[in-house]
Length: 259
Length: 170
Image 1 (cartoon, rainbow over the protein chains, first blue to last red):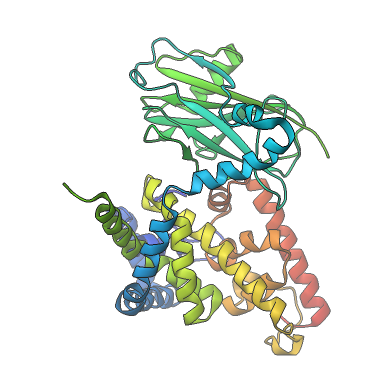
Image 2 (image 1 turned 90 degrees about the horizontal axis):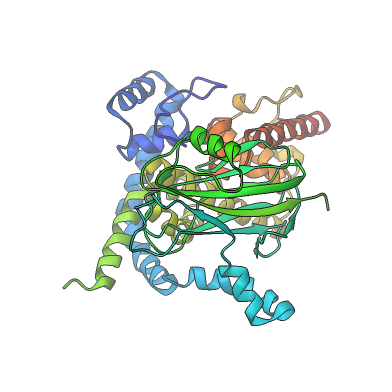
């Protein structure tokens, strides 16, 4: 979602929940906020929703916030730092049973296929960026995707990256039919900011379509924004060793087949 | 030197105050129960916090809130419906038996139709019919393709039509 959404829903003449919530958060631009307020003034349905939201805000701030904050803080304190450990543990337990501890370490930390442009200066002083892909099938547990993993249409994949000081990130894919897509930020024309050196689980999961064959996914790390068109062109020129100034590519590959 | 624990506590409090209303309001609307909504607000906030913290802007944070709160509330509704008797058709508001156009329905009726839909269609239907998000926004929020959103909405609409034709209610 982007913030330029102070528009009516395509099926009707009403504001979306997102627009109304962003208006309450004062997160719309001045023209968007004016447009939304003007709409609310003239639309009874949206005015009712706006009033309800403000009533909920008053109720939350007066009663709910004070009542629930201590519990929330306690829960957050207890869970801090444990999410990723639990995520890794879930992956490691079945793997250890099958292939032993050494294989499990390779599964979660293996280098994949990585190329680094010598001119990339944003990561000097940091370790190389890394990129991991995890998949879920139905309601099953998450599992790591290696280069020989076979996935199915409708499997969902998620990404974990270590930016290692890089400022921008895009995750793109070239599927079995050679079609280029941007998976993160989903459908975006340009890379988005990413922060930190530590591992970050990217928001959202991508549900695989029914195009079969080898699919190559690449995390594109850079110090400045880069466009999807630049990435696609670099991959077309050299799919195995693409080069763009100041850019680091980290690849993962899997095969997609019907169950 | 600032105690990092205190710093974290203040940040959590600030974020909870800022985004708590959006979560609470949404949970109230979906669950239709103040006490359940209060519990759900805490649970959803804890689950969504790390995404909010790393979100580049408020719109991205809201996308996470919609996604996680919808999932959580739909699960709560499913759990409750497993414990309760199913709603009899006569409890639904009467209609003229024609094809439902969910944008014309009130939110209560839309929610009743959504509750009857298969799990995979519910999330998309809530974001489209309850929240008024566009197909592209839903695709971005859920990390699925727009084509998948369209297919699921069509399937939901088809099922709702059949239900109304069968039961004679909207």
